Image 1: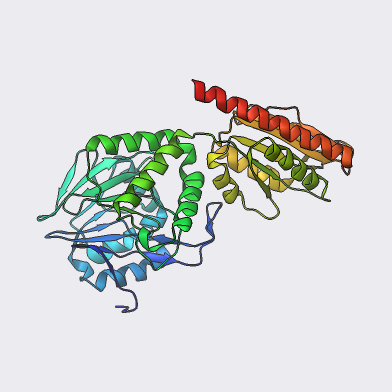
Image 2: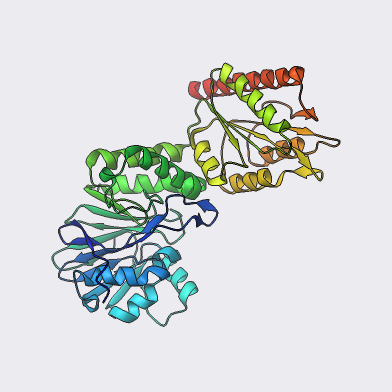
Length: 408
């Protein structure tokens, strides 16, 4: 067995036996610029349990880490908290290698595993309130449907006060540091927010329900171990990530505007800068993002607390510029919710793009605060002045909406 990879002790009787993926940069459209981890956990109790597995190309790494503390054949149970294949890619190999007594999943997890792998293996279904006796330790299960698949569930190890939270409370971050308190706080803040914005944002009502369920269970959380990223083990860090999820799930807009755009010959970019100046003059925090220099997943992260979405595009072939159309499609799927929206753009002879963007904002449920702003060809000083004033009006509209929301 490969002796390169070793298990990492999480707490007494629990080891991290996952894999680090330093190279992945695309997670179904989400730019994972810092790579990721696929976390799996080994519980060494009277009965040995493996919680989740890893993406298939990393099977050898997981088995090597397991073998560094125990013979893999001694594993009695395998628990699949989430059936997405970055956590079940080598599940069939694991079952074949260790021949566990039982494999556990939620009801929807059983269906998903059957659909993925068509394996000739019985899956034991567990749900809310069910437990698994490991002899000197006990696991309990709770379904957290749509956080972020229908099959999603969490497992709680009572003796360690440890919640195995599958994709909830995680982040895409490749690191040799296994615990959140070993990682720079600004990295945690950024990657946790980006993860929520790109994975869980459209499922915010389900996240809120899951948080309420966990609170009602009265579980004492000494550690929270997600399937991606570092483990939360400090009380203040656990409270911090739970609080952030609660705030993000409520989707509270702030006095912030994200202006994103692309440009062909620089005219729409000039408009964007002038609009940004107007928004800032109105007291709004502003983030300008060119889609030539920014990725759509970073844009989603910036919108997590934004109150205004302002989008600009030149017109090409009577349509929206491709990079802007791509981003809008992505944001629509994430159900991005801002309380103010507006569209702008430069054009040569037709100028349909701003109106098309305005219609897309309406389809996303975002109320437009101004008519689409269009400038023919290259904006002169007078046109840029109009752009700045347009930005000032958007700032006024956003602040008014925020005041109305606060008074309710």
